[in-house]
Amino acid sequence: MKKHLFTLCVPLVVATLITGCGGDTTDPEPPPAAGPPDVSGTYSLVSLTGVITQGATIGPPIAVGTAMLSQNPASGDSATGTMSMLLTVTNPLNGEVIEITDQGSFTLRTDGSWEFAGQAQQNIGTYTLAGNVLTVMVTEPPAAVATTVWQRQ
Image 1 (cartoon, rainbow, N blue to C red):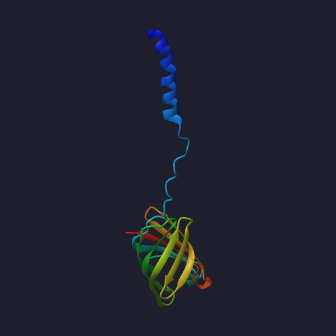
Image 2 (cartoon, rainbow, N blue to C red):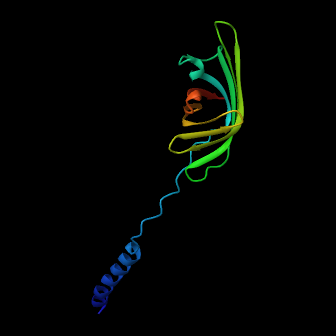
Image 3 (cartoon, helix red, strand yellow):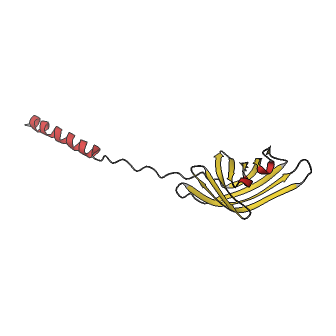
C-alpha cells in the first residue's frame, strides 16, 4: 500500500513544482533608461578651435577660460542645468584681448546633443564626456561654430 501511495504522490508533487516554478512567462520590466552623464563641476579650458580662432586650435596661454556647470537630476533621456563661462583670447600678433562671458541654461541628452541658451548667445551642437574631459562641439549658428575641450577640476 505504501508503494502504491508513493507512486501516486510523486507525479502530483512534480506537477505542483513545475506549475509553481515556471507558471509565469512574463518578461521582467526593463530598467529605466539612464539619463545623460552629470557634467556638474568647474572646468578649465584645454583647447578652443573655431570661427573665432580662424580654424586654428589654441589653448593656454593664448586662450584661457573657466566654465562652471550645475546640472539638475536627469529626467528620462535629458538633463538641464546652468552654466557660466569666461574665455579670454589674446591675439599673439598684436596683443589684442577678446573676452567672452556668458551665463545661461543648457540641455543635454543621451544621444549626445547639446543646447545652450545664454544671455549673449544661443547655440546647439553635441557633447562628449570622457572621464573628466568635456568636449562641446557647437554646430549652429555658423558664427559660433567651435569645439571647446574642458578639463574638470
